[in-house]
Length: 239
Ligand code: NDP
Image (tube, rainbow, N blue to C red; front, side, top):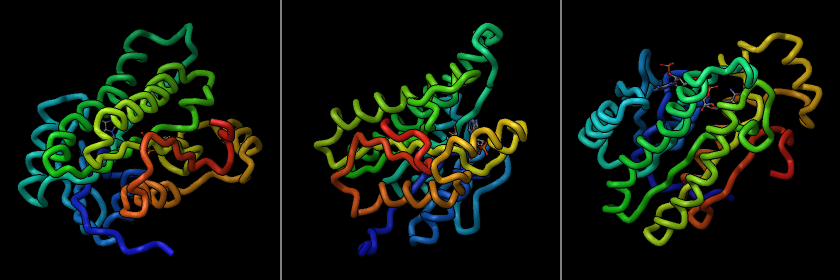
């Protein structure tokens, strides 16, 4: 049985919609103090919304400062904000590549680096990076996205080696195809094709990703670090 977890101060980036919104909802439901970053809109009921763009260090810093003032030092950070700019390699511009890396990978770096200050001081921290099945599986048209997401694995594992002794864990959650705005944009034929290759024969829900993230941040997962947890209906088996 899952034991009740200690209430924490949690920050989820990109918590105004999609998977980030569901993650924030789950943490609220479990009794945590939850803040989300948004560029527009706001997080679910019971959360503090702070404005931040993860491509801008000053904006990330200001968001953390506001959360620390309102809710206390951030103990759990979920780097969820992400974008895609899909196109085949030969058509991919350098900007298509670097902008995806800047948001998904360097954005996670900016957020986690800022979070780690307080975590080191508190000698406690839970870092969860939202990757994708595509990171290790690969996907045509997603050279930029896949590279940004697989890099999060080395990132989490290096943090684990660097900060593990300070009671800080860093893990990766790799969702498969989840029903969100991001997957809704895919053409219907492509969606049907994907479903055929998923052992569970369906898309996942954002709530199913949220459960895994919240568990990694819980007291029960204190000895799990540097792991890649798939939430993909079996799509990426063997990662
Ligand atoms: P959405 O497109 O629904 O939401 C993306 C979120 O990221 C939004 O809140 C968006 O904010 C935010 N964001 C994007 N760029 C920035 C930025 N520069 N600064 C701050 N926030 C930003 O995506 P999902 O919910 O589907 O995806 C969430 C994460 O899960 C992403 O990292 C994605 O790669 C990953 N993922 C998604 C899968 C899926 O099937 N949907 C599968 C595997 C992984 P705004 O509203 O302002 O644009």
